[in-house]
Length: 193
Image (spheres, rainbow, N blue to C red):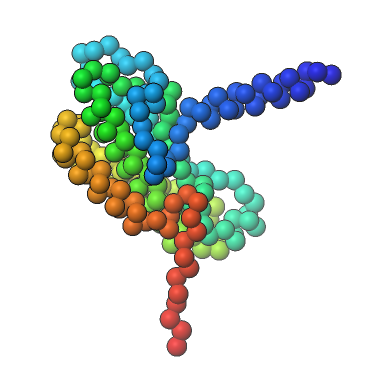
């Protein structure tokens, strides 16, 4: 008789533990050394950190529900996985954390671009996997921009350049404020004559 409540308790505990490993992007959350929980590889590696941040998009609904859903903001997330991220805690650790935060912010920016594109392209009779092309193309643009940022900042070594680029990314995020996870985009007014 006691087995079912005990089993449910352990399931809940496991879920809460896994949930604590994933951080959703927030304008107020700043990454710290504690967020990089994976042991760093041996020194000698040219890579000094790995920020496991990514765009996550998934939804599950009936065809009827899908037909009447236009806003998919809540289904697209920018996440950081603590258990899969590592950091070389040498003298450059603070700069590397700044670069990882820039990357996390960049993921949020491109997640908002996905949300915007889906909102603009979704129609009542859209195919249920209409989002695949938008997500794929946006992920490619994100990767290209990240590569350019890594080049411009010398992998985060240029503190000034990293700060300037991060400020630009935050401005771009704010320009897409209607496409935050909890937001509802304003309906576009059409001209009627």
